[in-house]
Length: 335
Image (cartoon, rainbow, N blue to C red; front, side):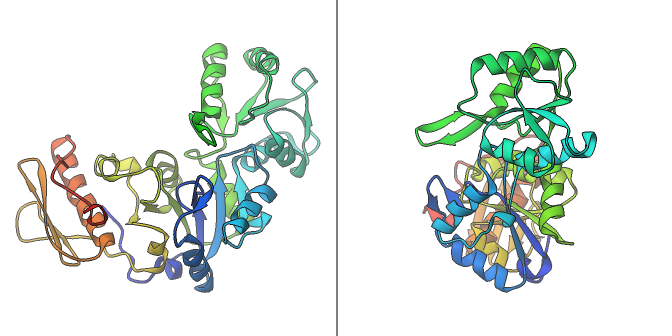
């Protein structure tokens, strides 16, 4: 159920498509060790692309934030859902097409850079593009809703329901998309993860024959990679914890698991069945399902612990249809 790489991932894959929040940084701070680990991956020959569903910021702004955290990045290394949305519209309507821009600077710049002409919500247009924009007025949203209901083609940058703001977790663009969908009865074409266009646009812009998606969220990063037929690395520095990983359905399961971005620099062994029924073993760890609970014995690296526990939990979930009881299971870093 997990993949195996006998060489470090930075040697087996030529492009890492890196989600940002929870992978490279958390809020305003870099994930500890991330800058050094990414530098080593580059030295091994791996290309790095920093991808984000946030359509409000420009690639220059994102790259500037990364450099401020010690991560080497240029605007050409950043790919946003706004750029993926602009590509979808340009491919369909051609250069010079007039597109309503309901969003922030990042969306408007992406449309212009693709040769499209962003216009206001009441102007003549062939389509509408929407994205996260905290200053978008309600009057513009109402106008957009009526035009979408009346048949104007609609591309949404993403459907993220939450957004990490300075004052806490706030409603994201997905809340606006849901409202527009409910009012219009129209399903938008979506550019951001877990939809495929953002991943395709990243490969087109940055290059790479053997891409690897790297993320911390199962329902966007990993699900998106699986839907696109790409391998993925789940890092555990963001929102996914033990319960979420152990209860992941097949479409949400990563190819590889690592505690942090150091996993790019290491081989990725997969657990193997042990001699006891339901047993999984890896690197000194042994995990057995015991009356619906996981019993972990032995010792070894934290990365091997996460991998073997995930394999045993998924085996139980697939066999019984029920998540395994984790009350007696504590990751090495927690105790």
